[in-house]
Image 1 (cartoon, rainbow, N blue to C red):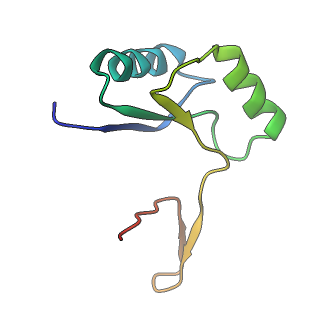
Image 2: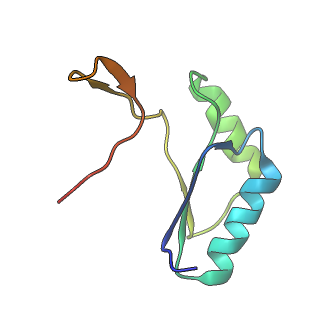
Length: 88
């Protein structure tokens, strides 16, 4: 596949470890793909996030995780979204 970024929104390190492990394996095997993993589901504490990430034992240059989820209010349509696209 022609990709350089692998993202699995909603598939968390805490609840879907085998899927996350496979995604990490894909990124590392390819050597040209970066994987962004969700650590936990929404509205969890920092302690829960740290426990999930530390407990997973992830040690890879091809994986990153970001928390908390980005939330932006769409004032035109009056709802909150967690999708953010940066255009430069």
